[in-house]
Image 1 (tube, rainbow, N blue to C red):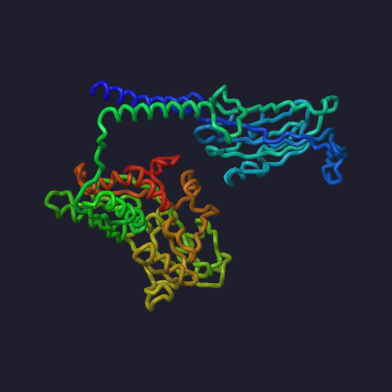
Image 2: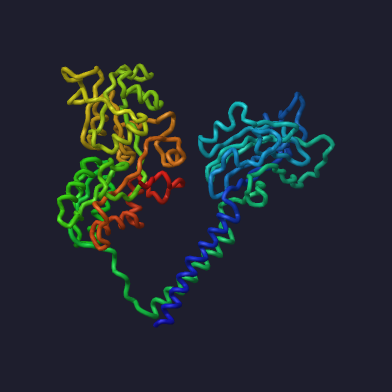
Length: 514
């Protein structure tokens, strides 16, 4: 039996260590920062069979004369490394703004255009005096910041250099790429990459190795004991309170946990982040053992003065402003949003929208979503006091002439925005995506996406924290439910509701610890 156990442990260690070594080799040795290129097309534009439909292809000209043996090249430049590339990562060339030069032996560039961007973040790098040009028949490309796996394409029209000859049917000489990344693999030079439609030999080898390890482990396990470890189930009762924005995740997780562990009774009583945290603190102080069967979830960190409440970052949550479709706007700058909530703008026509009064639909003061909105979008400015009870008209005696009302949940806000012309509010992205009767607003031209928030382009997000009163016992239902939320099944639930597990962020520091 001991020999079997030793074999099982050895195989398990091999199954873990070898992929880690392979990953470290790829990340540290092959290079965290790498640029690659692919020639996706290189073909002549001559009329070999004298097509009657050649049209403009017969009239390719430069400086008033026809091109000599014209040809077209489609070149793809891509980030094939393990992390982002910034402008400062490029190896310095003669010109400060030039990051890459592309020449074609025996041919000169007569014209070129950038034909494809993998995302809009790349566009400013090619505009204005960016360094993009053709000089002496050579393409000069700017120092483009590129996210991981980002790419752009360049289409060039070329001609044979005077005095050069080329036999028909022979292939063109490959392009010469000058430039690279500081400290990258192979002195940082740009390497030619292959199409990703196939599977690399390294991947095949690693897969075969893992299959052998799994089969060997299975054989070892079957030869010893076929009993399996028990599930991480706990019994008893648990109350989950706090964030209404995170309530769909909590309800789904509680239902699935209850199906897996029938002895568990989990009730969801969400009524706002601050209210939930306060309820947990009260329950902890009143509980004889100082360990109430309760977890409070909060959009962002708790207030000061609650030292017994322990936080655990659970997810990265995106929020968005939503507007009634009749308002006639889809994109607002951060400054315009602050003007709206200060009361400086009272009609949507002042922002280029419809002639409708602005109606501000907010959450109650104890809402974590409201606190996030105030801190990240209103730049720390508090929303003003409500002026309306029905969210349609200013009630008598209220200060100000802009309709401001407060509602108790994310669902109430979305219902009000959908039903009241000129209404604007804010909500968690997952709940918004489930509706077709409200319009999400872009902020400074940027939609609410994980990628934009992860890279600092979108401001309206927050960490979702789970709070317990002290450290729960490892075998308690509270501890088991928290482990469930962070395992594979729980993370699937979080993703399904348009949140993201903290571990999946490219910039994990956004899920800030306290």
